[in-house]
Image (cartoon, rainbow, N blue to C red; front, top):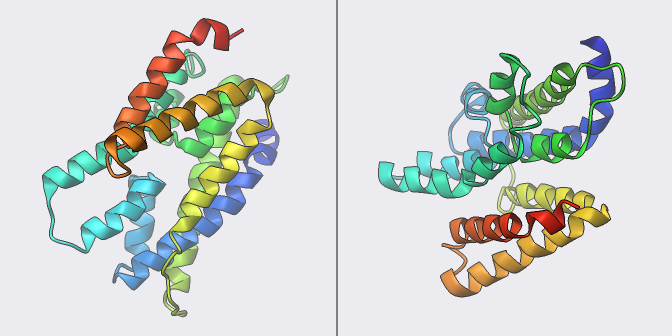
Length: 225
């Protein structure tokens, strides 16, 4: 287990820096809306869905509309359905530890674990567990720091939630560096643009996801060569 964490840690350093800052931004935003560090940490530890947690700040501070909240949650997190399908082979045969891996699977953990294999001498389930747990703790700890910092600082937080978009851009660039991933990146960009043009910016997420899956499924034989 110790060796697994030692080998996994270098892969998570970019996530460490991103999650600490992003988690702090979330904690500060929660504090500005009247929710202290206990609530922000509890939300991060239980929900652990960064983008939806930012959206939830708005839901928590406006009139509660359960149907809207339900549909919005599906739209924001629909991509996890596709992550799960992609990770079926990766997490197959890992025993009970796979339940935790599934629970804490996020964009960043998916981006790491999907593209790498455990080094020689490290058991597969412990390697994936180490990556998942480290990323999970980075996010929760960053939230705690932000919640505590929010007690002592006050500033204009407008635009602070853009750090989430910035992190996604960085992850995309990292994947783009690998030539074999570029065609899939182009498919994602083209499908997203088409969905925006046809359905509009506010309704494009699910159509774009469906279109991307259809394209990748239809061309999987050529893409997997």
